[in-house]
Length: 438
Ligand code: NAP
Image (cartoon, rainbow, N blue to C red; front, side, top):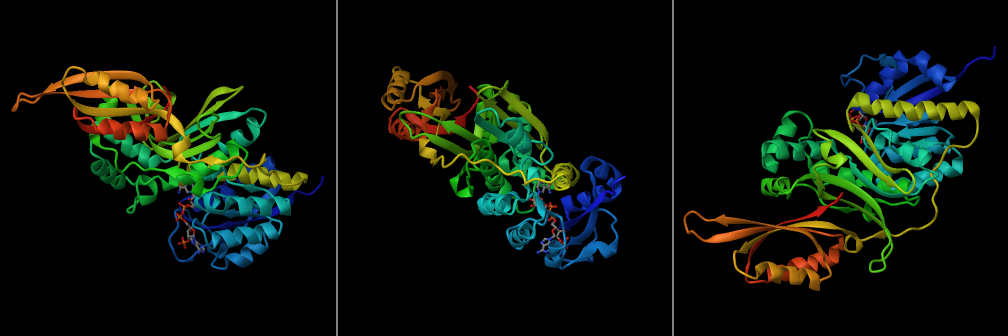
């Protein structure tokens, strides 16, 4: 019987995810060997401080602060340190030394993915990063492999658990953003500095990765329009709820092929209204989900835990077994296919439906004047609902108008809102939010 090959696995980082990966490598060694065809030997764990207490009890002799030496003597490198440097240089060293790399580092991939993919391609090694988008959910491999014979037209993702938790709290309890954020922090769903989550930066990094794989081109963070959830008010949520919508922070990548706007891919992150019956509307708490529309497959949805040490470690291990198997069987690393340059569209050239809330004077002819401005700017109205309010003190009546438009360009919508604001019968524009799934 031929001897089972041993592959050296270097682990960079032993935090939330790294510690669980180390545990699985040690505890499930036999299963992993059976599945990959090689013994996966954890050769060392690079950390900043060897004395930091770990979530998992691990042999002290595995720890080192010399990541560079560890990487140079490995067949497989798992990068779970996070941040740009030294993660970037260590991954490049690993690739140049012929090692396959598994990483969960979305920030690095969104910033400098193209360089890393090209280097891996040149060296014929595999660079895998399933954990970088939506934690445990197998989403990148289905896009890259299972759908490689189809054409994806749109991807809508809830890819940040913190913001989904906050918006869900606001929706179910009527809380303001700041109170829902405080609750998320108390429960450990949001960091002390929540900027990367609530401003949408984390979701934007994932949007760049999803768009690159889905549309076979390379997008970076600079190509992603990004708007977080800090301006979503309890009033926006209540008004959306009344009209049958829920507000979610979506990462969207879609092909836009219109004669009016330039063709290309719109990659964007922003708060979005979804009809309550849309499958993504049912994604509650800190869960993630990605909804894909493809020409032949139709609609698909992937749902699960988007973060957490153990769930994310599951995605890392899947990549590791697949890379190990490839090393055992031989052959070049699996790389992404790029079909050339497809432009990323600016937000002005993107089109979507909109929800507009208006506080207007209750006078005859108001609706016709507003509808006229929409038509003049080429924005067609799908739904217009009016609710009358009477101020108990002044006894003056005003009306709340809720308008949902058909798909229109961002530029046309902005011009419409500006023109509507100029009407003497408009008290205020209470909400302008993008809508998907209508
Ligand atoms: P973490 O808990 O902050 O752990 C980071 C680890 O890296 C620590 O063990 C730290 O060492 C080590 N490290 C950091 N800088 C280092 C340096 N310069 N040299 C050597 N070691 C260094 O991070 P995490 O939450 O596990 O996340 C790891 C990666 O997975 C990140 O890229 C993250 O975006 C990604 N990810 C995380 C999740 C999640 O749920 N946590 C989900 C998806 C993807 P010390 O312990 O000694 O400080």
